[in-house]
Image 1 (cartoon, helix red, strand yellow):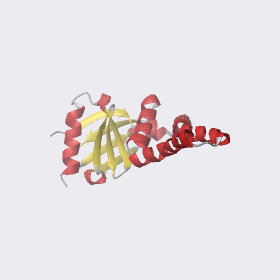
Image 2: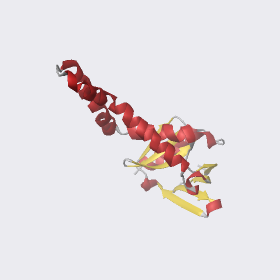
Image 3: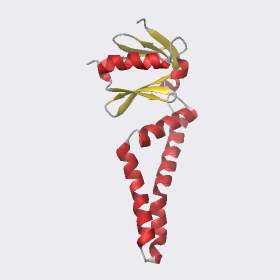
Image 4: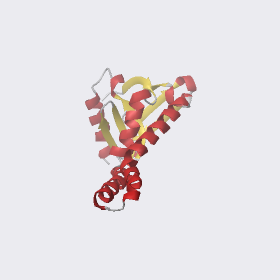
Length: 165
């Protein structure tokens, strides 16, 4: 297959970035999701079974913990987006080759080469193709920038390279 080339911002921004971060933190990471929901389950149980009325505010706080945790994380994402580095928002040229993915951010004179053995898994997420090294999100490829080839072909090509070890 010939090299696949497309240009897009190096990392997503705005609502797409927030959605990606929330998915990566809570849905992709099942243990964190369970640990976030556990206080709410415990609070509901105590609220339903306890006869101690002066502890009801504590039970309500426990039940609201997941909501407060997610809101605090969204606030942290919004703060991060305000103070983001130029390297994250720079336009990048992605070149998918037989030996890996080359990312060129020419306006910053930055070049990164990711080899296929740098990744352990590929995930097809709504707007992006995500490449992981174990549990760490290493690279995000935007599907809407892939105009010359379909994103499913790119995903299959990458998966073939990653999983053929």
